[in-house]
Length: 199
Image 1 (cartoon, one colour):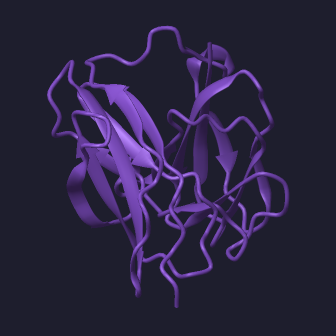
Image 2: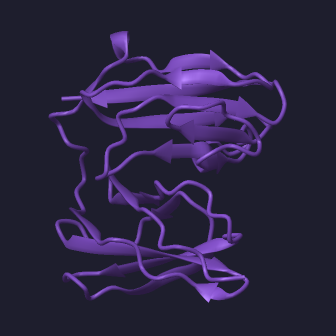
């Protein structure tokens, strides 16, 4: 088995000293088992921050007002991939104030879970970010792009999180995906909360 391809990377400055790292890459055929998260304070100066991670990864260890640079490596049975592209952000106490909730009334959309292909967000060229919280005990499979979401056709998966909703959040970052987002639950129970941001 060859090593996995270099993953895509997303970054989201959540405010309150929290940075969330995710991936944009579709499922690699070479069996990714975990990720290495690398961080530095200068371009190209990243060192390993955490290994053996699932994504999204939440970093709460930074210093406010410091610029941080991140890369990812994907790991499989043959070793580590090449590093992802580099992304960066300034760690702040507050989220970008220019972002507004695209959902009317500042309330996340609640979408009932289904053991079938389900539209979560339509294509939106104005999108500047989104959050998907899986309030279900079942795994939620997310598909970015066209096609039918299923347990074998997906881009990322969000674990069931009724008991720990924070772990079930997927947030986009610097590389904003503006296309269609579809979902499929391993079992129909609970719902997803979906929030979209625009400028």
